[in-house]
Image 1: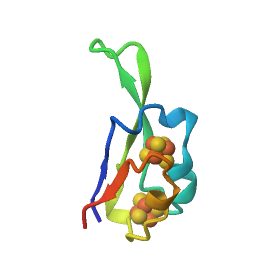
Image 2: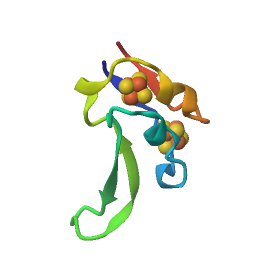
Image 3: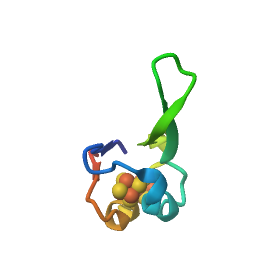
Image 4: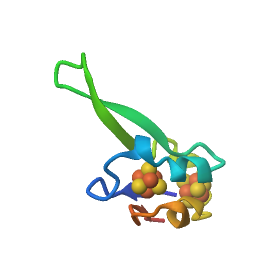
Length: 73
Ligand code: SF4
Ligand code: SF4
């Protein structure tokens, strides 16, 4: 199952993490954003890195207070 994260809505995943806590399949990960020189982390971004493990249960969608996650099928 493919997922899309709206980064205009999910701005500070490190202060939320609800989708990460909801997903028992470790589909979503928090990934450090870095400056162009890759030396300094500037923030965090939520990535649906392991989409192949997603079973479409929608628990992350329902847990998100910003409606930032969309299941694409
Ligand atoms: S739909 Fe279910 S399995 Fe897929 S990322 Fe969300 S919580 Fe995890
Ligand atoms: S629950 Fe929503 S707002 Fe919170 S980290 Fe996940 S995608 Fe971002």
